[in-house]
Length: 301
Image (cartoon, rainbow, N blue to C red):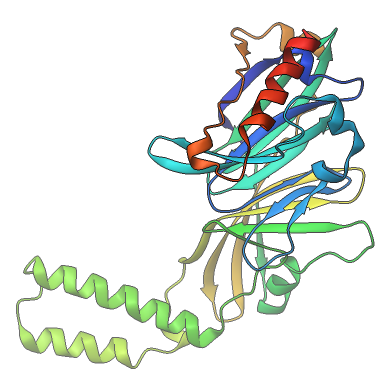
């Protein structure tokens, strides 16, 4: 997978520990952050809330550990921000409505460098032709105590991807065919009412055998798998070819392990900013808590 955005930020010393950094991650709706070993954050409707930060004693060395979550208004929208601890030299993948991104932190003396890489386009493509059963198995949650899988489609995240039944595929085809027929009528390609009724009847009577080859079912399916040691990401697309025959295009995304030398040689390194927590949209946060965090920053400088 190619990337269009890759940023390197310098993390100030008061957010850098011996083996980790503290950052605040923003999102709208839901978000998942996972490393090869564990899911450190999961906020999504219908799922148990996970925020490993609040269980980690290392957080107490950092400012704002007394405010693990807060709200901000950015570009006219309300965002949630959650504190995270990222271990050095460890890849983390973040899934949210903003897409998928990798974060990787490297220590640099008393400070640290953090790279955030957003994934967009894919380059290396593997194509497989699968039966319906093989397709369902492809998206099934892996077995194993330490293995986890996340699948994101249309900003919805789950552990598996349920393939639509054949009846559903037929209805999808009918809907698209009717839409295309109406476009043709509106463009005067089929001005005769008789022609329209004939084609409309054919569409209404369509079966799975009538769905044409190369009928797209789903695009941009993000799959993330972990096994306690490694983390992988793939982007897949499913296309109907014939009854019981589907094409799956698989795009592998490179998970990068950066070195300090690589990051220090970056063309532009951004300086991380201090958070601005507004009491007006955070009524549950006391002004004294914000003051305590700012005082801790001064003491650590």
